[in-house]
Length: 229
Image 1 (spheres, rainbow, N blue to C red):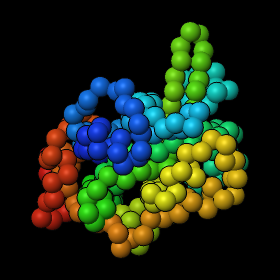
Image 2: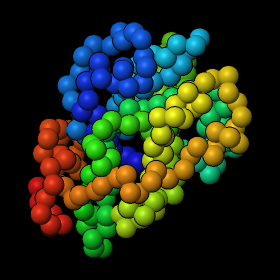
Image 3: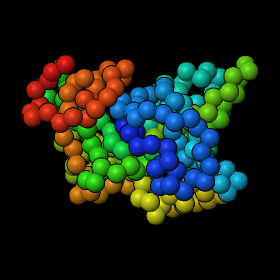
Image 4: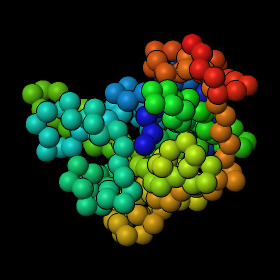
């Protein structure tokens, strides 16, 4: 699964990378510890134009009577996303990119201990998770939400966890974002593990365990896997 990530890049850089012509969002500080239920930045295509929007992380299906279901819908498994009722409608026509520049995973080091790791691309450049978005309305409340697609772990991730978020290559952005593209089998084929040789991972402090903790300390390498707060 993926339950925490970073977005340290500024909006102008992201707009260029994802070919968004107009950005109406306010500037934001670098985020070192993005967590579920928070508003997250996403790229989606509406009427042929890409836009940067903020979506709540935790997808709320349109048919749900209770929006708190979103707390359990932060990830969508690539193997079942086309059939699972919670995600299949969004997978068919409401896909998005979730910009990031790294993510965290926790490796079991004992019966009750886990060591956090920070995973990023070798060049430390921003990238995009494959995401789904949804629109929910009820009792006068409107929620636009999202989930990240996950897949089996690659060779780098396997010692840490058996799952990883889907990182899409740039050449797949247009295909993924196009809401008129409903070729679900071809889309599902995009949800593959990112090449391990293009990625790196290092242990970090358990400071990152608390979502409220922010700042460069979250991603700073530690010399060994000893836990410290």
